[in-house]
Image 1: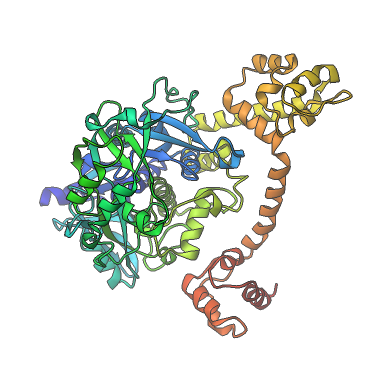
Image 2: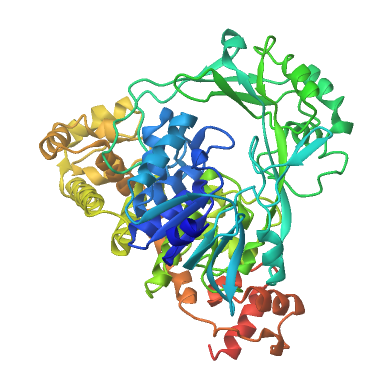
Length: 629
């Protein structure tokens, strides 16, 4: 005991509790910004564990990973080094909807994360359960472990995932746990409630893992990766995938649904034993059968867990039904007739704390220097957790260094939308990011996350100079190429063969290439048929990123300019600050609901106040009048 007390005799700048996706990003950010950081977790073998499906990215989530990377976080790099398949989703739609996604090698993902963290200066590790916080006069001063060891710190980031009083359900059986095979964390919830925090319960689920050798893939639809796979990270640390592993798709059936229904009375989600809310957009197979009774089948995605393992993740079959019901039903799925289970699916209930109790920095309003990130805030998804961890780690380091906080606005990043949604609106079910949640998604594309955020990451001391220079070169090259199209003319004789090949109206006279390129059905491949364009690309040695950025800037310049103008207008309201601890109860002209919500959330700007559910434009007008606006 004495040796351990000597070991932790120093006061850390930042302690991060939990080493999932949020905790890993938080620890890396704080340490890379020069803060002496300690990462405490219950099992160091499970750093950045992919508890659910072995994949990163997807609709809106891929944009978040790119933003994390642009700021100097690690999720994009690890996604690249551990990828077994890459897909750019929604390529048939506009670039605002393009979303990168990788299938990952689960074991390699966790290993690469750990090795990166071990190479990070200023970062220490310790394996133990944190059972309590040390708070003095409303300020965090450290943590206490289950062995009674006290470790002092100037700031603490809680990223407890599903471990706070976690309870696992399989049919009518349940047992404590934060993840299959791992015990739950206790003590923290009760202490936070004593400190005045409001808490709640949420649930999430996971499907069975099966033996890939027992499946008949010939009966399923193969889903290969992209022919020319890209990467997540803007850095040239890894090469694009030369070989990829395919996923497969199959379907449930009426027979499968009937077999599953036999166990509904033993399902904790249907017999009322689980009362907490689960993720609306990733429902269990029981939920899907019940909610979409008109559907006679549902898609199942058969996802390999890595390059060499035979373990397979059955995406779309999340369940908490008894294991015998799961097995019997799954054996009736096409291609699964001889399936062997590695482990059954299960549901897990856990404690969370409504995020309206946080500031934009993710620091709690009640305890100075205490930050929450990830599922403790009621979110779901690796990417959402990682981005919150990054922001909490950045702001914890800045607070210790007595510097201005780092807050991203809604028009700057999906991360800004995520944080603002959480602390302004709260959540009563696990929050998941969608492109539809971002009102400025034309500005917040996956291709320009580096242009938006790398200068800010560099200023923080998080993004490297190499990263900044690479971004500046890309930006400069694409700007010059756009100008080339504005300056260069093409004759009708040169243009018309290209236009005819795309069934586009011919031109009668010479004109600028920019106008030609702006046509919806004309793309970069068409423009490269002009000798002057191809010569320019070869001489300037332009890469795929520059060509893509140039094409977007030419074809969507009008939309981008319009959205930027709208964002600038809204930012004027962001600049109107509301005094700290403003008493809304004295504004009798305002609705009672608005006064209650505003007093509870305490928005820092007029713009944030306008986004609170239950606050009407009339209420905002009253507030503006009172503030002399």
